[in-house]
Image (cartoon, rainbow, N blue to C red; front, side, top):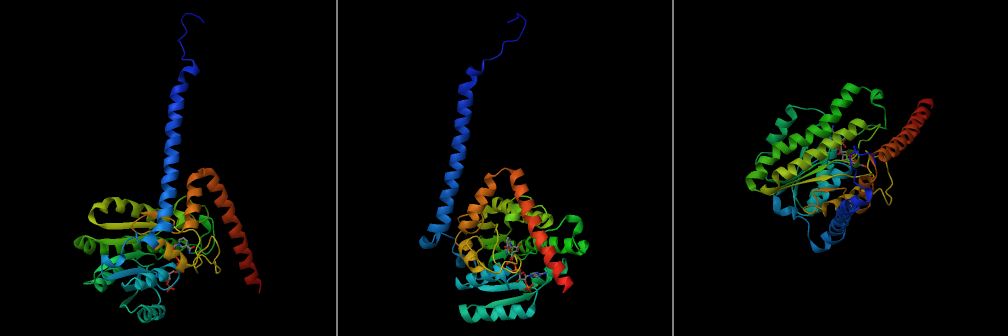
Length: 326
Ligand SMILES: NC(=O)c1ccc[n+]([C@@H]2O[C@H](COP(=O)([O-])OP(=O)(O)OC[C@H]3O[C@@H](n4cnc5c(N)ncnc54)[C@H](OP(=O)(O)O)[C@@H]3O)[C@@H](O)[C@H]2O)c1
């Protein structure tokens, strides 16, 4: 070696450093895997039979559920009523609200209150809701209302985009934010409360062709997780629920299957995780999907989602074309 050249450390000499680093990374990865399998096992197999989940009835007399007349929201309303809570149903259609309320009252022998409200609006609707909730001890709030695209679309293709974008942000983000602001002071006074925010698996990773929906659901997830930390010491539970497909009007999947639970089955499982998981995909099969999505590299997720959404878009456009031709 020429005299003036700097001495280099032979690769072999670094081996112990790399080996220790590798061991730390392997230990961390194994720890994460084992702890998430353990949490999943506890949430989906032990929580219900052992009664480990939060006792919702002890948090207050009333539960408020947005988007409560169909799908996941209706299932939350029914199952919280089954646990003995009085239910405040907030949704758009007065007739559907009356039907669901009387169904719940006669089946579960609890009180109900209905609030007909269009969450695509902003401003004054929240003053009205505030007044309606005055004096009620709301122990549980389920921010469930939400909307998506009618089918996957490029951002520039969104029909009547000014209205659609405003509606989506109002329904998917503003409603949960304002509803939380309305009920939280009461919960803090009573030093207890539960806020369940229904986000979506589309909020875990960017979802091309459902871009705005995905972004609003990521907002919901971040909003919830930050509040969970902010209020952990004040007796308030915030839970972010991130479902994959559930058979509802919104998903347009009528038949349930192994990977697509019914709203009732999904909510039964998600409610059993309350107080155990701050952030959950809600049921075992969705959690397995979530673990895979978390472990896969982002470029792969993007590629799979783009091609899946292009496929759904193609079939939707074909169906629309056929309808027009009829
Ligand atoms: N289903 C899925 O596969 C899935 C997957 C991931 C996340 N999610 C999320 O889960 C939540 C519930 O979805 P879902 O599938 O259960 O929906 P859904 O079956 O379509 O039910 C939607 C509910 O929201 C109400 N609603 C709709 N627009 C409203 C508005 N402008 N103002 C007030 N209420 C309104 C509906 O009332 P009306 O009947 O009166 O319209 C209905 O009660 C959403 O936040 C969604 O993003 C669903």
